Amino acid sequence: MKHILLVEDDLTYSRIVKTFLEKNGFTVQTAIKVKEAQQFFSNSKFDLIIADFRLPDGTGMELLQWSKSNYPQTQVILITHYSDIRIAIKAMKLGAFEYITKPINPDELLATVQESLSAKVPEQAAAVASSASTSLSKIKSESSYVIGSSAEAEKLEKHIQLVAPTDLSVLVLGETGTGKEFISRRIHDFSTRKDGPFIALDCGALPKELAGSELFGHVKGAFTGALENKTGHFEMANGGTIFLDEIGNLSYEVQIQLLRAIQERTIRKIGGNKEIQIDVRIIAATNDNLILQAGDGHFREDLYHRLNEFTLSAIPLRNKKEDLEDFADQFLDESNERLGKNVKGFSPDVWEIFLAYDWPGNLRELRNIIKRAVLLTSGSHVEKDALPADLYEPSVSVAGNSISLGGYSRSSELPSPKDYKSQWVEQEKELIQKVLMDTKFNKSKTARILNMDRKTLYSKMEKYGLD
Image (cartoon, rainbow, N blue to C red; front, side, top):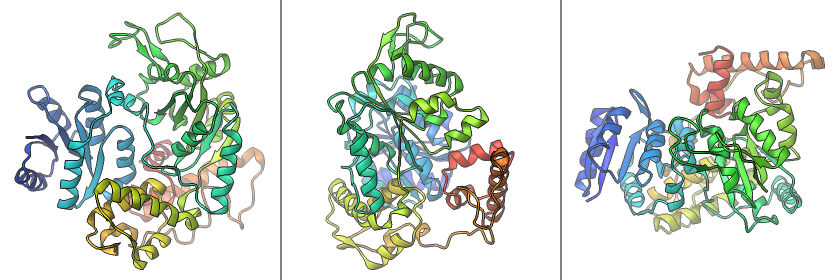
C-alpha cells in the first residue's frame, strides 16, 4: 500500500481529500505546515507528497526543494489556485511530478496520483539531487519540437538552422513559457556537438550561496556542508552544450566567475586550486532586459556581450495565433498517449476561446490546459466545460492608459538619450502602480495584464517600493 503525505492547512479540504484517497486504497498522513511535514520523514517513509502551494510557515515550493534534496525518490504533486499557474510550472522544473488546480476534480486527482506513483524517478535526477536545484541538470523535452507555419516561426527556424552549426554563444530572449529551452535543445541537436551532453540549469532556482558550486563544482571541505567533491554543471557539459535559463538571476560575484570561464575556457572548483579545461558551448536565456540591468549595475555589460554573440527571440503565443492549431494538435496527441484517451479534437466553442485568450503562460500554459481538458473529456471532442473558467472570463483592463512597457505611445514625445532610462523607469513604476490599484493588488491579474511573470512583478514591486 502506497503512503502519501498530504500537506494542506485547510482542515476541511484536507479531510475530504484524505477520505477520498483512503477509499481508493492509499494510506494518508496529513500535515498543515512545512516543518511538520519535514518532521514526519524522520519516522516514516512516503511514496508521494501532495502539498498546497500556500502554507502557514512557507510554501509547497520550499517543501519540494527540501524533499528533492533529501528524499529524491519521493514524488511531489503541488496543489495551486489557477492564478498560481506560473509558479506551479516553475515547480515542475524543480522536480515536481505535476500540479493540479483548485477546486480539485476527483478523477484528475486520482489519475495524477496513480500516474505519479507508477512513474520512475530518473536515476540521473536522483544522483544530482544533492541540492534542490540540481534536479534541473538534465530535463528532457516533453514533446518533439513544433516549428509552426507562421512567418515568425519560419524565420525563427531559419535562424536556428543558421546558428546551430557554429560555435557562437546564443542568447534566447522571451517570456516565460515560450519554449526557450526547446529552442536551445534544437540548436544543440543541429550542432556539431549533438553527440555530447546537453545540460540545462535554471539559474532562477539556484540559492545564491550554492550557485558557484552548482556551476563550477567544489572540493571536499570547501565550505560547511561540502562533505565530498562535486562536479559542476560546466564540467558535466564538457564537449556539449550548457543551457543557462534565467541568466539574469545570477549574483554579481558568480557573473564574474562565469565571465572568466567564458574568456579563458577554464574553471576552478570552489575551494580548489586546479584549473580545469572546458570545451562547452553556452546558450543563455532570459525574460529580463539585461541592458537595463547592466545600467543598474545588476548585470555585467561585458558578460552580456560575451553571451550575446547571436540573439534569438522566442515568440509569445499571442503573437503567433496562426500556429495555435499546430501546437494544440501536438499537445492533444501527447495528452491522449499519456492518459490513455482517444479525444479527436476541440469543439468550435473551445477554438473560439483559445483564439481569443491572451495566453500569458504561453506554450506551457497551453500544454497543461489541454492535458487537463483531455482528462476531463468523456466524448470525442474537448468542450468548453473542460476548460478553466479563467480562459473565458473577462479580464481587467487598464482604461485610458496609452503607455506600454515596451516603449512610448505614438502620442508620447521621445526623451533625449540622456533622460531615456530615468523616464522609462518612472513610467514603468507608474504603470505597475496603476494596474495594481485597478486590480485591488491582485498580483496574478497584474502580472497577466503587464505580460510579465509573477517573479518579475515581485522584483519590480520591491525595487519601486510598491509592497
